[in-house]
Length: 393
View 1 (tube, helix red, strand yellow):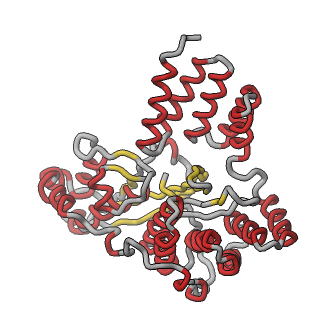
View 2 (cartoon, helix red, strand yellow; view 1 turned 90 degrees about the horizontal axis):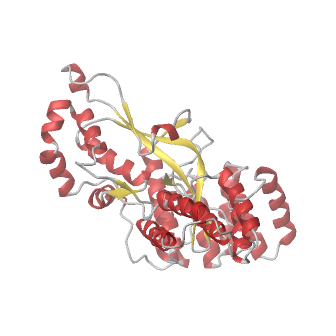
View 3 (cartoon, helix red, strand yellow; view 1 turned 135 degrees about the horizontal axis):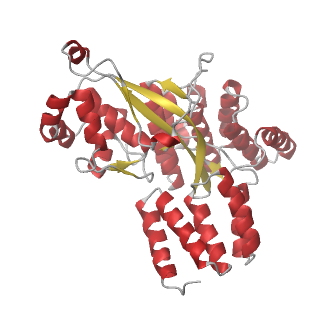
């Protein structure tokens, strides 16, 4: 999954919502309202790291050498499209790994040989374009996968890309007219999913918005504002970036500007649940409980159970020692999202408390397999090692 995050502030009575990159609806809408009146530059210090949009797709010398030397023979033999795609999927040649910890530029993802799906799509597009191959970006309609960080909830969506052949190659009999979709999820996870073509401006806004959310989870509001500001400037119609901006304002204590941003997003997308959740939180912070309650009722009609509803009930039950109730709630959470690693971890804790070490090991293995960062993977592996030393049931 790419980070397509919605941030929801868990410390507030009503969760605040924010959406990162990839799952935006790109249907034709009315022209976006001017975004400049929503900016509050005077409330933030200059960022420690300047935002350079031109770096996102820039190739490094290592990437140039990879194309010009490492896979040059393969590109000549198989054609540029097929040669590049085969190299991307050949672990002996590139060894790409999924890692959602940070959304990376093309050169950063290539150097690390890892990234979330947006990072890997950006890297692939940069390489393809260097070979003069046409590239089309797509948003894939998958159910959002939620994660958490620093009292915020983040939802991940998904993007991929389509690589075509050069006209010169087709005329020369190399390859054919067929374009190929490059995706870093298994094909079974994408079967039957609706895709929407998105612009490069939207992809850049997604990248910048991801960086804003990632920085926000680290607590650096000045840097987060710089990223979010660049995101809304890149694509003023991208509601997710607007919502990120509003969450940053809320955390800085700029309640009226935050409200303005959320209402701005809702004028374009009246049923945006993230904007509604955030608006309710801001109204509550202003002591406007009646208005907040009305928004929460509207949100409840659209979203029967908020993200992590069953998860939180299950975790709380496990923490108070009610392992059977915890197991039941967490199994309900799994029915909504069968792959979230923390749910499997707490199920492992519940089963261990019930004395079922076999099931506990199974869920720890699932937690480890579904972890999205190396740190999470290593943590679950260590816990599994300790459990392996326990007496077999």
